[in-house]
Image (tube, rainbow, N blue to C red; front, side):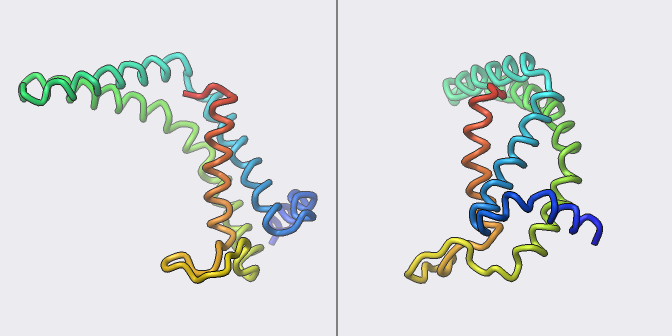
Length: 155
């Protein structure tokens, strides 16, 4: 109850634009929050270098399909680099996980009775006649994540 009141107050200016725009703007804020923490808690130079090395190893693996022994050796090295990359990206994920779960709980209780936030006329199999709050959040978060990661040069 206390957190619900806090989030209602905190996000009230965004929700004044209506449910759809409120969810889209909340998605933008949460995406910025996640990406800022990701950038602060990861060594971006190391992440960039690991990504570059992984790309080189993947290209090398494509050329080694006829040499299984060498392929396995390169694949093992790629898996090792990928594990290092994942370890470094896990810290910001763990930091942002709990706040996001709490906010998602509030969003669910706030928007569960709203029905379809974005609608379309025909009934599309598997999608129905529109998107609820979670669908709107999901697609807008992907969109904002791509843009903010490029602007913030996150690797």
